[in-house]
Length: 172
Image (cartoon, rainbow, N blue to C red; front, side, top):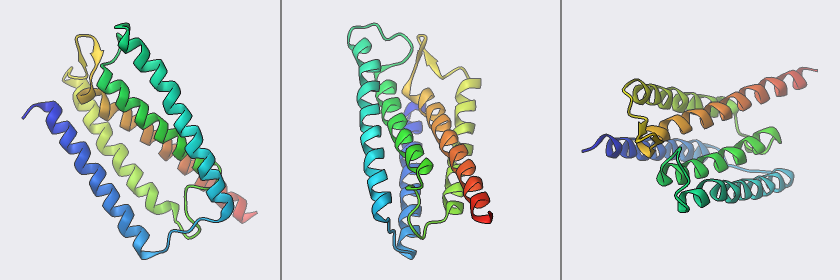
C-alpha cells in the first residue's frame, strides 16, 4: 500500500469518525435552528458555492491549459472543496448560525482541536520527509493534511474568538 493510499484511507476514517461523533451529539439533543439562522446558513451555502466556482476557475482552468505548476489537479480539486466548506463554516460562525439553538461550542472546539492536532502532525511528517512535493508540485497525499490543518485551524480560531466575544457580550 502506497503512502498516498494510506493517507486517503486515514482521511476517510477520520471523516467517518467525525461524522459519527457529530451524529451522536445531535441525537442527544434536537438540532434546531431558528428562522434567522436558517436564512444565514442559506446565504453561507451560497457564498461557499460561489467560492467553489471561482476557485475551480482559478485552479482548474490553468490545469487544463497545462499552466498549473504549483499543484496537481487532484490536490487542486480537493483544496477547492475544503476551502469552500471552510468559507461556509466561518461565515456561519461569524453570524451565529453555526451552532443550533441548544448547541454548545465546547463540543466543536474539542473536535476541531483534535482534527487540527492530527492533521498538523501528519503535515509536519510529510514536510520533514520531503514528501509534500512531487516534481515541484503539491500532491494530494502531501497537501491534503496541510490544507486540512490550515482550514480547520482557521475555523478553530474563529470559533474560539467568537465564543469569547459571545461570553463577554453575555456578561455585559
